[in-house]
Image 1 (cartoon, chains in turn green, yellow):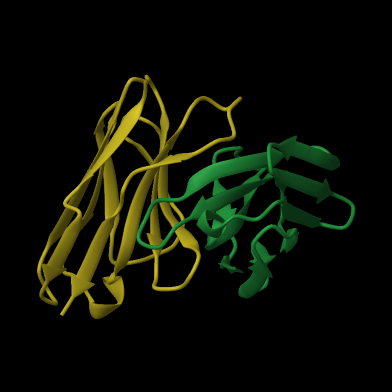
Image 2 (image 1 turned 90 degrees about the vertical axis):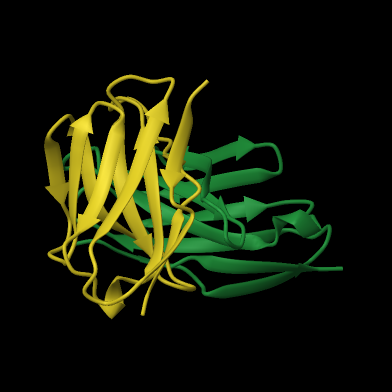
Length: 111
Length: 113
């Protein structure tokens, strides 16, 4: 089976940097994705890591360590609009078509 | 460009009634299609996925079923709803196996009373 763990809530100040961690256990690992979801909305894709290391996309970066079954999402220069839930998701290697999501981290950005 | 549609946006149904939620995708061919359910304040639970017409894989035994009658149409159904079926239902699509990004529809908020 698959399990993913994330902190349930994080609070950070506008303009600061925040890191959201994700640890996973899976029978077959292909890659780790991150999604953002605002209240009542649909999740939107942020990043994907298949190999170890850091991927940078603007203010957002994502890191993966396959040996540690661990990844994180780094948000820099936080803005109020970054207040949302963030989900990590594992892409299953057995089929390559299944994605399993963590329970999500609710980020609140305060002035 | 690709778009994904889901309807209805909200639905209130009595226990024991049937259900049919529809999802359609435009602007792409032979997508992988997915149904997820999200309980309030929780993560997304994969319910079904499909790699082609008539091909459905079920993730968890439950009161729901899925069908893919056309390449870009994915339907979630139930014959008799349970209270526990309440939630936010999201349809998503992904390109061929070389792609990693899933695109989600706007979702259907289902309340079973």
